Length: 574
Image 1 (tube, rainbow, N blue to C red):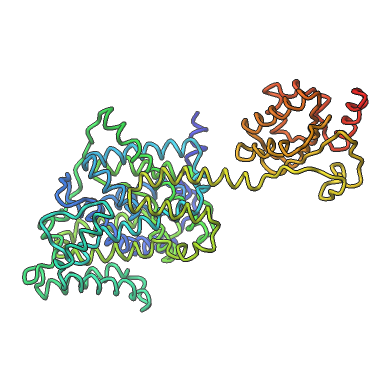
Image 2: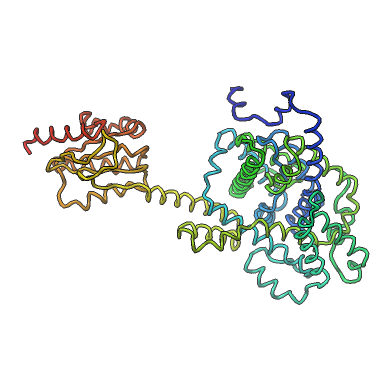
């Protein structure tokens, strides 16, 4: 049992014990970890603020929630993860689902849903289904990624424009668009200037060549200094963290232990959001790991990574944290700055902790407009906008799935989008299988075969009809077999089904095959199978199909099938 567990859980941090780790790599990891910690600082702060709606009571100040999530998740995933360079923490992708859960179940409900999602991720890892996440069709992931980006931009519009009203903005997209239109006259021009200037700094800073210092940190510091020196919070009402969350917006202490209220009814209600958080977290973390593999020429352990992400999502809520996952941008930055082992991720977490404990008192002066600019820029980089431009060139089914998933994410919520997206993905897969599988008549002119299966030039007796099935014979393509026979004017005395190009089949296809056999046998005919592979043959044997058509009618090659067909014709004096 122990060996079975460790086959599924192999943290990459254990590689540090093999004696190959040296001082040079240690210094590189420390430098990368400090840099990534600075990059994560404004993102974690902004996500903490944006993920908790105004007026919602939390055991710990909302701005600090995102920071401590980055610290805890970053440490756990680096120690236990299946990637050498993964950087974990809160991400913008979770914002829509976090806001939805808090609105419906309260902050305590979010903590419970996150713990449940963590448990689901651990089970997924132990069940070795980490690799299956990679097979979710790109139109689905692209659709809800772009939808999330649009939702984030809309959620930050009020702070970006400096709109200050007594009533909170509605969460629903269409209602929010109407609400923003009605309150544009309440926008604060100086807050908007602060947000736009912060966005421009974030955009142009990397182009100046000073990549060691993150543009988001520079933008937030410059905005804070400028707004404070100009006195805009007092003279012109530019909102700051302190004005909204108090002078102790980020307390210089560790978060309290918070155990959510448990009940069967709450767990039942939170199953769908928990699954959504788990699916979203697994997709983003494994995608981040794949990207980092390409950067460092490595290969991550998907199942170990899911277990580590699950552990992080179980522990973070116990200390008031948000859902966490691997962050592509932070992981890529880790690699670009020299990080090559989990030590860099641990240093990133320690860097954040030191900054929080030492400089938390200055957080109260950060403008809300600057925080909104950080998230708007993150959303702008996150959206798959180029895919929207390519929609006319895509297959219609792919384009429909992408647009549907995106619109469901924007107009409704991420839970519905993920659920419908997964169904659409399954339907898309079925259609693709059905399109690639062919059932066609075989003539003496066919040449695209191996010698033993070749039909060209061979005598197909009168009364014998030969069909070839090409591709996986699954439920999406099963009806093609029945449709092919429907087009035949008269049922043959012998039907030869060439199956040497069928790698696999399922029960629905078997049912279709049985229907064909029953029709032929009812008309006094015989069905002969040619070149059946192992998986289909094993399935046919288990359900008694072989005994139904007779062992003699299962032939290894087409030549054998033709000989058997002639025997049947002779036996019946055809």
